[in-house]
Amino acid sequence: MLQANNLDWINPDNKIVQTIFYQGILSSQVQAARYMGKEGFVATTGERVICRNGLNLIQNVYIGAEIDEVVPWRAHEFKNSYWKSVKARFHKLISRAANDRDGIEIIPNEQGPSLQAHIIDLKKVNLAQQNDLANHKLKYDLCVQDYPHDSKILFGVSRGAATTFSAIAHNGYDTNLVKLVVLEGCFDSIDHLIKLRVPLLGWYKPTRKMLNKLLYSVFGDYNIHGISPLSLVNEFPHDVPVLFVTSRKDKNVPMESASHLAHTLAATGHPNVYLLVLEQSGHNGYYKDNIEDRYTYLCVLHALYKSLDLPHVPFYAEQGKSLLISCKLSQ
Image (cartoon, rainbow, N blue to C red; front, top):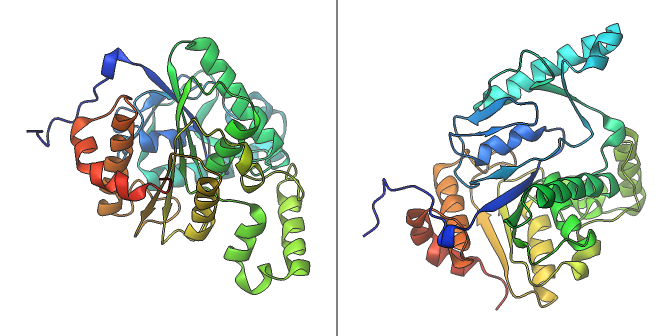
């Protein structure tokens, strides 16, 4: 009989897995702490990042390199101009407020750049297109270099989920190494997302085109005619299981967008597509907004880990076994 207080990970056959994490838009790597329990991880700056509300979904997170749109606080260039310094301090206030909201704590690095705050270089933001794919490939290549024999899980959140989907479809990763893809709040395409987010304007082509141009004016590397997860669905490898996690209360990436992508992928004949629909969680709160959603997410993912013979927590895996079966789209 499994005991509820026995929440230690077990590693079947001493298997070690590295989880390559890709964050959402405007976020730095500290977002990964949400999924690391209370132990957290050591960031690329050397700082330890923990989350008081962390959900124990990732055992070993791999960051490798921060994506190039993120400029950490106290980076050298902030000292070269008054305007950059003022802007940095403004972003520091926003970052600290967001970290406090998320329950994230960062033990600061007194010597170098710090992830206590960051600036986003908007000229490099492209919403899961070419620059994101290049950043993701850099993480993957570094992980393979550092841990050539360890299995890999790809885990993405929001823009990071769309990037992760497109990266494994487009970048030619070794699917013998990649054992699972986890996609939280993943959109299918920006075009469809605009229709869902702005229904009065988005369904009309001229106004949708205008809204796309507005995105381009904000995010300088966004390509209106660029790739999307939906455009790459036929290239997604069928030998890698994938879990989509969405929520009925997600207003930023509505459930219809993630569900459409998941069902479209299943329709291609992919044998292992799972779709978990949470009930009460907002876009930035799958891990904390609702205690039932939080527990469901935890149990289903650990059940999936166990089914793939990956490291997992047996208690959660047992609780999530029947839920996982109900999430499977492919038969």
